[in-house]
Image 1 (cartoon, rainbow, N blue to C red):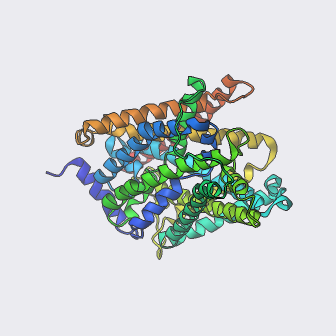
Image 2 (cartoon, rainbow, N blue to C red):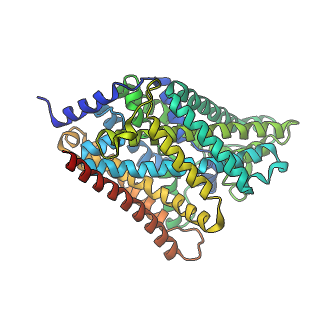
Length: 474
């Protein structure tokens, strides 16, 4: 008997027929590694000292594994273009699907807008002291931001036949840098520059429980997140039910080892006091290679590779954020204009242009005046709340979603989803209530809440207007 879920899936699959199926298993695995692994988290974790492994393992147990399990389960059940948007829509209703997609879209827009700043900073590090002026020059940052967004939009219009190579190159660059980072302590140990090195040393935390919970939530939802994003491209993937799920299984242990061993390497050279939280990887490479004659050149190459990774990761965000308006357009929750495909490349060209324009406006505006920069920083902090909301919805689907979805979930998966749901709530709390020094924690929390509420109120308004427009047409 054909169920409502089956009919809804058939409708989406029918819409996806026009899309080109460019992504294979290898592309998906590399994209997972590229998207999830960041460079700054190994520095943040190294601040914990020898207890970092305890927190990584706790985050893996209570968030990383539950996230992977839920993504695999939902993707096998609903391997549909739009990913989490479709899962939430079919698991709950259209409103849930739209709001979760709205929060994920806001997160990606923020990341893309920040991309130019990250690239400028990395380039200044790679060039050296003569380029120290670059990150503080508004025209330079704006020019690089424009060049980055325009280039990524052009790549996006060309489709994943080109875009997947951008992502793959970025993943290889990340693997190369982390490979060097992880190998460096062993090389130094063999050369007698390190007296001892224990990469998997574990120690109990010595800090306050409040501080520990905060760091734990950041490592979980901040570092070990992102498996759900590639599923947005299910309609452009060959055998999505199989390959996206396999990509999570293959990439997850690699990613976990990169984070754990990378943190151990940072800790072995820097300790936990003077870590550069913005660039811990190049900092470690410079220190570890300081006895080599070409240490500076090698470190600069490492920084350039990390810049390539940043550009490629931003490209993944642009690709996903252009597909979400497209699938919402299929459901008439946004104008059909967003769903129009390029006649040759079969990509949502209007959606890509829209995302590019929005991110350029935000990126350039953030360079005008301290007031706007402060507002932009607030939006950036609120982006962590947006992601927390996304994960609350993801973990809620197998717990409280539609009976056809919930009943098929085994008990262990529901327990895992409950763990992930709790960690997501904890991450939202510590984003709103920081333990870092701020002039007023109450005012800081009020600003973050206000930005989050206003942003989601805009999403609710767009949804309500779309429903009214659709009803009038009917």
